Structures are given as C-alpha cells and as structure tokens.
Amino acid sequence: MSPLFMETNLQNKRHTLAHLLGAAVVAQYPHAKLTLGPAIDNGFYYDIDFSGGPALGDDGLKDIQKAMKKMINSWTEFTHREVSVEEARALYKDNQYKLELVNEICERGETITLYTCGNFTDLCRGGHCDNPKAEIDTDAFELEKVAGAYWRGDEKNPMLSRVYGLAFETKADLEAYQYQIEEAKKRDHRKLGKEMDLFTFSDMVGSGMPLFTPRGNIVRNAIINYSRELNEKLGFGEVHTPNINKAELFKCSGHYDQYKDDMLSVTSQYVNDEMFMKPMNCPQHTQIFDSRPRSYRDLPIRYSDFANLYRDERPGELSGLTRLRAFAQDDGHIFCRESQVQEELVAVLEIIKEALATYGISYWIRLSLRDPENKEKYLGTDADWEHSEAELEVVIKKSGVEYKAITGEAAFYGPKLDIMAVDALGRQWQISTIQVDRVQPERFDLTCINEKGEKERVVMIHRALIGSPDRFLGILIEHFGGNFPLWLAPEQVRIVPVLDTHNSYAETVYASLKTAGMRVVLDDANESMGKKIRAAKTEKLPYFIVIGDLEVADQTVTLEKRDGTKEVISIPTLMEKLAIEVQTKAL
Ligand SMILES: [Zn+2]
Ligand SMILES: [Zn+2]
Image (cartoon, rainbow, N blue to C red; front, side, top):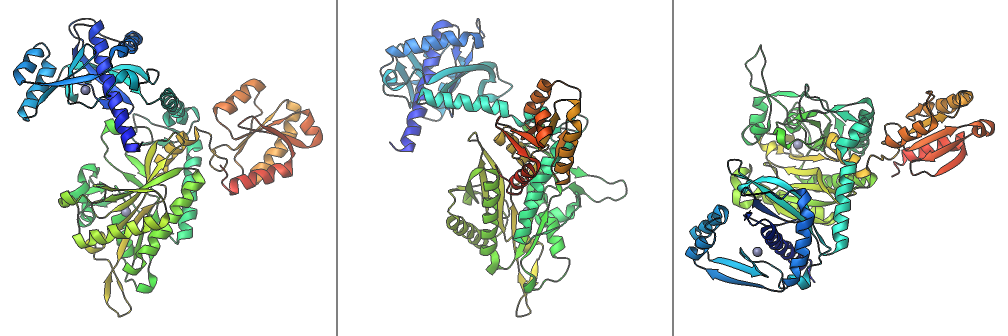
C-alpha cells in the first residue's frame, strides 16, 4: 500500500468517525444541532450547538464513545443521493448552520449530496470508508475532550461545543500518540524551566522577553560558545552591533517596505530620526563590509553576531521560549565572489550537520523557494532568483540530507535552506537557515575590486547554525526532557557528605573539581539525605557524589549517575572521566 493511499484511508476513517460521533450525539441529545465535522491530523471533531437543552461535557464522553462503538456494528455501507436545494432546505429548516452550508453550496453551483450510513444521514461531500464496521478498529479511536468554538471561528457567531476524537489505524498508533502528548506535557520547557530555575518572565518586563537566571544563562552561554567554536572553524570574525538603527538603513535593505509591521519603533527626545529596534543583523553587516574598499583577495569576508534582535510579535502568538519578542541568533553573513558561493554553502551546511549531530537532533531540510505566482512579494530579478535557487538545490543534493522543495517560503531577498529539526518526540522545529542573497548587495552597492582593477558585485550569504540560542534552549529542554548532557548542564556535579565528619574530605574533592573547571556544588546543609537526593533528582543533575566513612577511608568517591548507576572510583579517575565527557560533548 502506498503511503499516500494509507493517508487517504486514515483520513476517510477519521471523517467517517465524525459522522458516527454526530449520530451518537443526536441519539442521546435530540435537541443538538450538528454543524461541521471534519477529519483533522490526529482524529476528528464535530462542532455542535447544544443551546436547546443540556450540553455534552467531558463527563458525558464515555457514554457517547460507548454508543459509537455499539452503533458501528450496523454501519456496513455508505449510500448517498443528490438532492435539490429545496429538499435540503426543508430537511434543515430547524438547523440554521446546515442551512447556511446548503445555501453556500447552492451559490457555488455545486450539487448537494446527503450521505447515509446506518440510520444516520448527513450533509456531506463524501470521502468515507466503504464499510466502517469492517475497516475501523474500535480500539484505535477515543473521544478526547469538549472545547468551545465559535461557528466558523468567528467570535461574532454563536459559541458551539467542539467534541474532539483521536483516531489512528491501530490501537498501538493511538497509544503511541497519547504517550507522545503526555511526554510532551512532562517535558514542557515552560514547566521544566521553572522547576530547574533556568529562566522566568515578568509582566513588568513584558511578554515574550525572557529573563535568564544564572543557571539558565550557563546553558545559554554553552550553546553560544559552541556556535563560536564552529564559527571559528568556518573562518568567521565576530562583530558587535547596536540594537537600535535609523529607518534609513532598513529603507535601503528593503525591510522597511517588506517587514515594517514586525519591527518595534523607537523615538529619541533629541533627534527626529525615525528609528527601530533591529529585527535582524544583515543590514548592519553590509555597513561593516562597506566601511573600506575590499580587494578580491580579502574575500570571502565572514561576520558572526550574537546581538539581541526584536520583533513585534502579536501577544497571542508568544509561547515560552519558542516564540519571543527579544532573542539572539547565532547569526552570520558571508560576503564572497560568485565563484566562491558553492564552496561557502557546502562548508556551512557541513558545520550545521556537525552541530546537530552533537546535540543528537535529527533533521530534514526545506528548500524554501519563491512563489512564482506572487512575484511582487519578492525583490530582485528572475535571473537572480533562478540562479540562487538552482545553487541551493545543487548543494543540498550533494549533502545527501533528505529535503523537500516548498514554494512560497523564501525570504523576500532570496531562497533558503531551512533546517527542520525533529526532536526526541518527533516534533519539528525550524532552526538553522542558509540563504543566498543577490538583492542586498545590489541595494547597498557592495563590491570588491577584482583582478582587472574593476568593481565587481559580491554575493551575500546569510546563515545561522542553530538559529536562536534562546529558542534552541527551549527546544533542548524538551528534547532532553531537562536531562542535559554534562557539557550543557548548569550544575554538573553535586557533592553530598553523609555526616559533618566527612566535610573536610568532601571539600578536598570539591576543590579538585572546581579547579578543573567543573560546575560543582558542595551540599553540606543540615538536611536529611533523602531530601538532598530528591532535590538532585528534581534538578536533573547529571552526577551526584556521596561521601561517607568508606570513601574517606579509601580516598575514593561514589559517583552516582542520573540513571541510578553507581561506581566507586578514585579522585584522579573521576577527574579524567568527567573531563573527557565534557570535551567530547558526549550525549
Ligand atoms: Zn461525510
Ligand atoms: Zn541576514
């Protein structure tokens, strides 16, 4: 069976289950008015108006589900017939929602069809199982919840009850999905970020503007410093740039026309300049490049930048660290000659692969192309676009990474390779990006002097390695479930002496680790051992060292790993083991 057919098949099952849900609800709640009931990507729902009598709540779902499982036994075949608009209107004279749908179908000049299965008939376009009883595994669906939803999503319309169901091919698929949802809740970075004391938000500071605690900032810095190491390998020079820029810069780059709605404006009490918090670093980097004449011998010139960026996101779209108004990027720009573009792109992509392997994150690549139907959304010539798009496709094919070309996802100045990370729970996040830009060099008139002593237009490559360290920290918390590998952990080792008499030896161990640069804490507070061990578990420490009589006598430590495994080792062995684990960034 082809994957496409399986997909359609599952969609048909989900759609069929929406009918079954409608049928079961109407049987128990005769006053209920059914409205729309589509298949969705984890099951199905039906929007229902219960305003004429008692409403179905979460506590009534079990009954409805039971009724559905019983009812399906008589659902062995769908039949359908076309009806006239008059007949349809008469049928739905008491249901203003279906009436509205009937009128719309009529206006579009389409035929009106009614589908029947068992004793239940519904207005529908089709797309069901042939034989629901035979095809649907009744253990593979479950009613999930009831939520409020406005008719057609418009808050001016009546509020309906949306009854959600989960549905998959098999019971195992359903359970795997439910496990993933439960696990995602446990790993929610907003919850773990609080428990592990990594970051916070304050209403007084503003939404979407995270405050990193000392512990959180250790992880954030570890991410940034690793990107710095990789930048070094690629030959980047780190620059430092201001957060506020004059509008003139963004007018020249094109952001003013294309991106102004997402930029925060700033005013000065002394000058009349229109100014903005910067949403990206690219225009500024053009000014560093252009600050002196460049010879072809100097190229490629590569700038990296970790400056904070600001985007005016709508408050409703902000969520923990994954969508922010203030964030940094491990950003960088390469200014090079036409003949150097391929080589630069390949080198950057290889480094991104290396970075993601270190974090243990799998990925695929989206080749984000211009939408040829909407050329007015983009700057630059057709020839440049075709050139850049072809260039990226060559690089991606060479790399051997799985990719999909998607139109309409390009930046306004050029096509992109967007790296889509797939985390431990199978969820996807767009992180890194590589973009070829022949528009900004034109607009800022960026050139080098070539071998013939002539001015030659350069090409600009935009790239990030892991994207935003702030957002990536949120992704990593969920990817690791808070169990950071040693090199990222805010506190790497905690030493716990059993009794006061063990303190002096514990201090020696502490001093050795501290001197070696480990992030180590000596917990000699007057608390019970049980409490200390529980705290270490909540804080998800990679290592825990207990020191008692035996350890003092033998000059050893008992090293306990997060997973509960223990070993008794000497101090030099301990030092070597931890150092190697940090250096190799072991997972
Ligand atoms: Zn249908
Ligand atoms: Zn850029």
